[in-house]
Amino acid sequence: TYVIVNGEFIHRSEAKVDIEDRGYQFGDGVYEVIRVYNGKMFTGTEHLERLIDSGKKIGMEIPYTVLELTKQLKHLIDKNGLNLGTLYLQVTRGIAPRNHAFPSRDVLPTFVAYSKEVERPVGNMKSGVKTILNEDIRWLLCDIKSLNLLGNLMAKQKAVEAGCFEAIQHRDGVVTEGSLSNISIIKNGKVITHPADNLILNGITRQKVLEICRQNGIPFSETQFTLGDLKDADEVFLSGTTVEVTPIVEIEGEKVGDGNAGPITKNLQELFIKEIEKECGA
Ligand code: PLP
Image 1: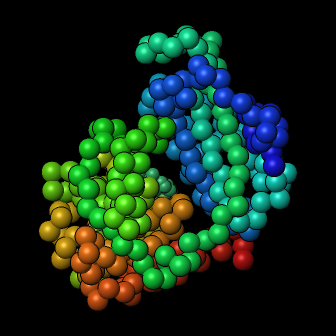
Image 2 (image 1 turned 90 degrees about the vertical axis):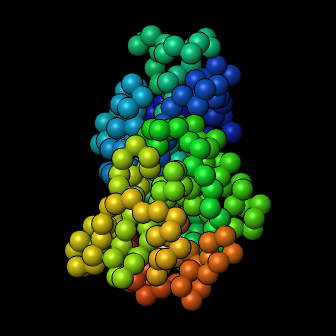
């Protein structure tokens, strides 16, 4: 299979990391994961705009436009014959002698992209997933899709060790997001999710779900909700590029509702799939 390194298409086995790449040494960079359905990117533009935005927020200019990146990624999909899967993209601040201070402007960022075949998470979407609660100990710029994922990794690992799929993170009693997904609750027919501020990643899937709510007259609100609200919720679900819309059926061993995927979550799943079909074809 082919990968992209700084705009060049090379074989996976030929791609190498320099030991002084700042992504490797410091996690000094940003990334994206884009879903591919039917050989086409889903919400590709939104992801690429966020990549450029994440770069800006860490004082790094991505050396390509959305259009240029789209062209490269389409070419990668074609070259690898990818039908159903994901694209992973990352941009680091480049290769320079190890120093906390940013290197000079003539050090070019390192851009890497590759593709992977991935099935849709149909099992989890149907049966729902179990979760744990975990204190959100991450930094205060969670809106940046930074390579520094240690807090998220530790949260996810804790979930896995508890036999669960995801960790629901909370800060000062307020539910923020998962380790790799956003979280919404449904109470009395209304979808509630954390506002898009510095405490969460403003998921592209989250935004798509809210747009679906708007277009279909499903009440929603971007407001903080507490651990108490989570416990009292009628339905709870995850959203994200890899999880799509996935019901949460258990939190810390306690059932959400009757322990099955709820009707509004199921409706959102169906409407989300329609969006995929609209953008990527059947
Ligand atoms: N929150 C975190 C911490 C994530 O890593 C992700 C990534 O998938 C999301 C939320 C969901 O974002 P998106 O819907 O853009 O994939």
